[in-house]
Image (cartoon, rainbow, N blue to C red):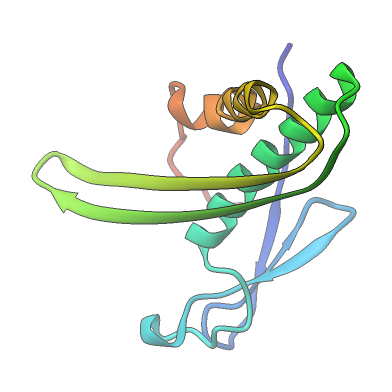
Length: 136
């Protein structure tokens, strides 16, 4: 099944501020001051990491509910390091997830394994075909 997702961006003249909308919700994106932005919103890299983190913790919550596991808060910290290499950019993402609740070590390991199989993780590792920009 193909899932169509559409995001619209309205760029404003201050820094690199962009109003990012899916038609129902909006957030502000920007670049840090060091990149000549105004630092009033998430950077593109932060938005990407945020989507991955949200998918991982949501997957943990979903699987825990399916299995009837009693968990409390699920918190994640993701960080990335990007290096320029002769064949392109190399990105390393560190993922740390804390699951509170009355679960065994084996159950926690299974939930973490499921987090690594979330759809955004699989999508990022999959084959991407990004078309060249066209004039609207």
